[in-house]
Image 1 (tube, rainbow, N blue to C red):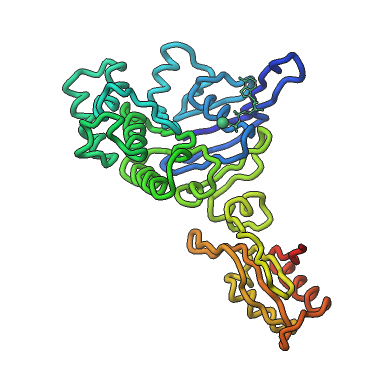
Image 2: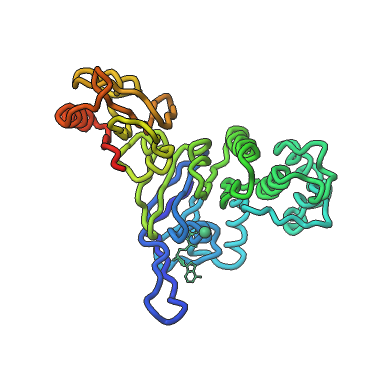
Length: 338
Ligand SMILES: Nc1ncnc2c1ncn2[C@@H]1O[C@H](COP(=O)(O)OP(=O)(O)O)[C@@H](O)[C@H]1O
Ligand SMILES: [Mg+2]
């Protein structure tokens, strides 16, 4: 549905210094009907990428193909027509305060010259689709943050686009509202078969709704793939960002070992890690950790406290042999150093 081919965007330096390479040869293919996450720190190039996808920004070089059309090569009416295929949802819906929810949803249809009867039919459909029934005559001041974002999503879907681009759609919402909006987005993908691209800095968003994830770093792709594969690769940069480790436990008199597992065939669960310690003369206790099951596979970042049978510290030899066994089986294991 979306293919980026050598996408590069260079901005002249504002002060006349070195130019800024915001996107540096991005090659990416996003399949139709799925939810794709694009993540990265501030300055990684996420907004530039989304602006290139909408045709707002012309690439310095490369192709931006959306549904078979090279957006970067279009101008004027042809670009405007292609852009109707792309719906946008922003962090802040920026609704018109003087209009009701329904009339905010109708706004892009009015601009596109859709006749009144068809517009009303479409708005009624959208109100139902995004779960705003009963609230359609409220003004923005009478809507919650989540309801306002539902209006924003309905407005983005008004022209029946094939692609919905969401730029930080939940960054201004609290946790439970975020989950409701993400559920709505997955539901829309199911019901409409639409392709969704979500730009976010929130790993929780990626974990909850994305089928694939791409990490941008300094304008390049640092990692990309199916969420299950990316999250389970303990050596990749994203797994440590997707699954956060709680702060190290305090007041424990034992050797603490941090373990990241997910793609090991030998260590599939934290219990496997605990059991294996015995063979090295150690007793392991799980003292902190985050364990998730993504696509049926357990992925975890855990901290184990290791003691010997009498509760004293384990020997350096025991520790080294245990760590070597974990390492050989694909678990990233390190002693926690204070
Ligand atoms: N119009 C512009 N002119 C000059 N530099 C820009 C412009 N837009 C973005 N940049 C630079 O490009 C890089 C990527 O920016 P951006 O795409 O906004 O990143 P993100 O959205 O991931 O935070 C940054 O170094 C930013 O300063
Ligand atoms: Mg940005």
